[in-house]
Image (tube, rainbow, N blue to C red; front, side, top):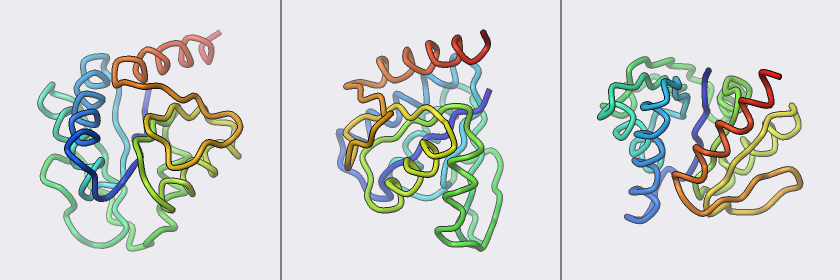
Length: 150
C-alpha cells in the first residue's frame, strides 16, 4: 500500500520531528511513501522512512533531483499540477502542517474519496481526520486500510 505524506515545504523543528517519526513508523509497517520530494515535511518524512529501510517516491514539480533521501524520483516538470498525482497516488493521505499547496492536495484527495489524516492542518475540511501525533496518525492509517480491505 502507498501512503502520500503531504505538508509544508518549510517547517519548524517540531513539525520536522513529527514528520521524521511518521516516516519511520510508515516504513516499519512496510508502506511505500509518496511525497513531493522537496524540503521541509517532505524531506523529513523521507529521512525518517529511509532510516528504517523504507521506500520513498518523490513526485517532483521540476527537473531537480529533490531531496537526498528519496528512493525514486519522478521529475514531472509540472509545478503545482503534480499535487493531483500525489493526492491520487496514495491509498491514504497524511498531511502535516502546510499552506496552499497542501490545502490543494487535501481538497483533491477528499474530492476523490480518499481519507486524509492530518496533524496541525492549515484548515479543516469536512471528512478530514485530525490527530495529534505521528503514532496516532499511523494508527488511523491502519484503521482506514483495514476498512478498505473489507
